[in-house]
Length: 108
Image (cartoon, rainbow, N blue to C red; front, top):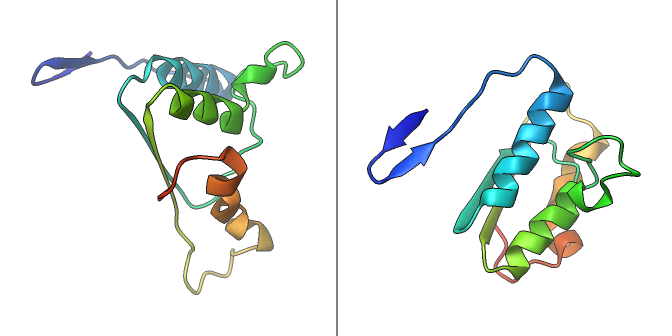
């Protein structure tokens, strides 16, 4: 547990990626003020809970859109790597996130 002024943040160690994504989905669900996501390759279609057929509402774009509708400020920053030899065409995928999520403007 991490304490910062009047807020308490909980954390836990995960060993499996499925546990990590599940924990992220729980944190996003509990967000009441704002959500910040910084990434270099963001796929809005990623499912945070498995199997997707049982948890369709936990696709990242759907969950973020739901939180935005609830009044939570959603901030998504996808940066483009400069001069990287690992850059692929998919690295621009995140630039469609604002439109894909139908988030209120400005979406940054």
